[in-house]
Length: 257
Image (cartoon, rainbow, N blue to C red):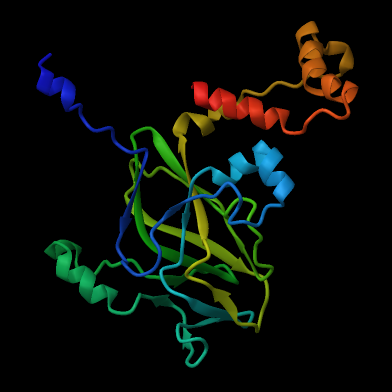
């Protein structure tokens, strides 16, 4: 191998790649260990499971601020803070179709993804983030509500797994509105979804079915009791032990790996 080859290794393909179709709004942001500052201080300092889950993935935001309202049957929306309202069937970002067609090959023109799309189920609406996504071969994408971030009481987000290594598709989410006749604000600075890249083998049916159950205490092995002793009994014997042992061990292991 030449020195030049050693000095210039081939770049590693990112596990996850975002494509911004709508340049307005915030770029995707790595998810935050503090859940955007909403975690209690003690949880942020000592509860590694909560922090790790909060930081797992990326936030995607609405490209623009808008209001949404549902009357039990139909949706309307406003992008000027409620000054004007329009019914929703399949709505594009302002000027996106023209901008999309000016860049797209001839046979792709006219296929700009819509921003808001009404679906047949009552109270359900599809919202596009303005992004497309690819993942490394063998990886998929879990789209879910932002982890541990306080959620709106007026709508719920569905979760979905997309094989984005094979399916180059707009990053959208479906919401189910549960409050009628009330304007609901979607802020462009508040994450709409959290995106998590997962290896497809994680949810392969064979692995999902691979589950065992220990039926009772009489079936615990010596190793089980030893692990319980190290995890639980040691803490109980030292009530004034400094909290955060799990966090310290997990962070040390992460540095080693």
